[in-house]
Length: 400
Image (cartoon, rainbow, N blue to C red; front, side, top):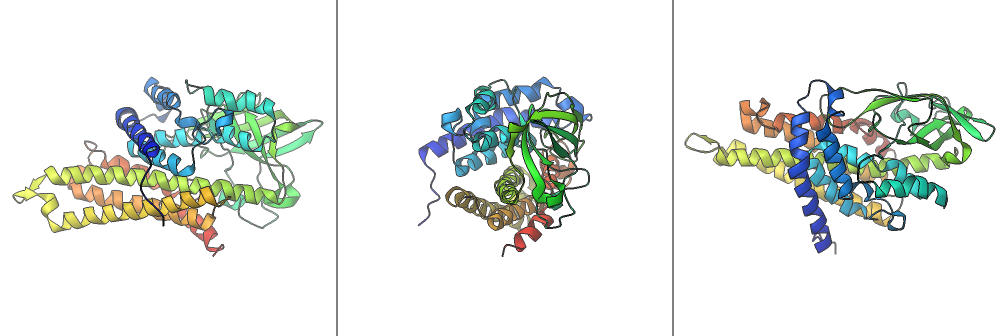
């Protein structure tokens, strides 16, 4: 029999994350979201203050093994934390979520290379100043989901890595949708090594972000998730030692990518859950206080039904996400069908619930006096990031 009862340790982590989200993330996310020039967001001391506090609390190293300096938490605990962070602000939560990607995969695939662990993993885990941030550059201007889940040998990444002696020379560009792209100092880069193999010719490289030839574009100016840094990354004859290839091209690449997307999609679903819950709680509080027709509007059936539908949808999404998290923990490398189902359900739910919660507030719902319009704007990108919900549904349907 499965139990939904959380342990004392899990409850403590959840409470710590909620307090951080309430006291640190929510105020900063609300204020910086209003900046018209998105470039100013990532120059603002308030943004970096929150990131530093997140690092001080260890949220950046939850997924890294204890023996390498991390917390070694299982996905269920990490998703408990992530829901609370996203409740506070999905943009900052996304930055924190992506930050460990390069260090985490270095820890997993460096092949016992202690030099890599000492140079890149431990310094990341010991960081309390948010100086070390990871990114995963894969999407390109001409290629997105088609570069991971297609058998067409003619389709491959345009960013190339060519062997020259004992070094790889990297050239190309990654699109503006690279999360943390403009602020990361360590990149988990996907680049084409052997175009004759199509997508299977992709290699995975660890690339320090300060190497000569690495440059960044301006942060993407988005509808929502405005505190998630996303920017282009360019590679112009970037040279890197051959041992910095963490995963070689070949049949194993698709399995690796599927594993990344499985865990990533579950995480995006949790972000949607946090946003929906934030919207629901604000609308519920408003409905209990707003008087119309001589009584609080929650006593009007149309409002009560909207709120109950939101409550029901949030609980259903959380149950599905927890099942995906449990499966990811107990059945490596996880189940893409289940992860996609949880993500699509949760992010579609977030979009629908935020729309309905705006409606609960009526005219105030579209006013910046309340946070509902921001939650609505933050929900929409979650149906697109890490593979659109349409694409993930199509991919998952082939696994049925």
